[in-house]
Figure 1: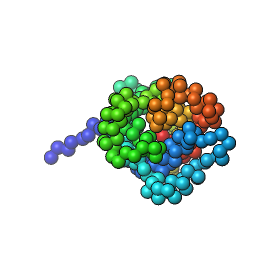
Figure 2: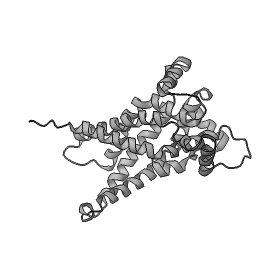
Figure 3: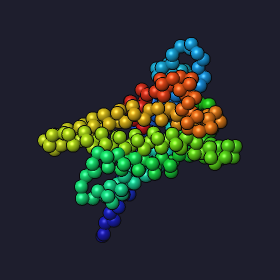
Figure 4: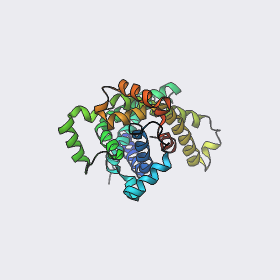
Length: 266
């Protein structure tokens, strides 16, 4: 009997989708808290007491119960499972096409990761808009398909791609910076460490460090993306959102919800 061997790109798609499912289920509460923190700035009055991550977390549990922390997990699954799969399969295909004989340099790693993330981000943007709105708590959507239909009918197809510029300004640099730091961190490891039993732990540590650094750099774009997708009627453009956030909150307004980004990456 002849065995059918899956194409490497398909394997990358399946592995990426599986990892996306696990990380989405684990970090959804942090994602929801991050979105609530980022959207609070429009409703807070001057002089109001500072609201932090723990305050929002306890408020959600108190008013929406424990399962309320997983509000928006359905669109998160619909976005991450195919989205991560698209990212990994695109990343693998590009790497095999351009860097089959050698490893990419630091700059090439940035471009490679950014390109793969751009493809995935554009493909999944309508679901990302719905996910953000679910998490914000400002919309009474019941199902993902119902939400997509509602936005399309009441706001037009353009609303499903709101925040595209901010999303790409977040996702493309994040992925590129992550791949660069991760690749360089692994290369800096001594040869004996890469063949030891601690390889999974070392890879995990490199990934955490790369994720934290990439999150710090792209946090402002993430805040802008959330604002535009939750309240598209308030902003004429991404630049308008940037000016509005800076005018009302100053530079610190671009770093709301950064704790979640540092804990879970993107």
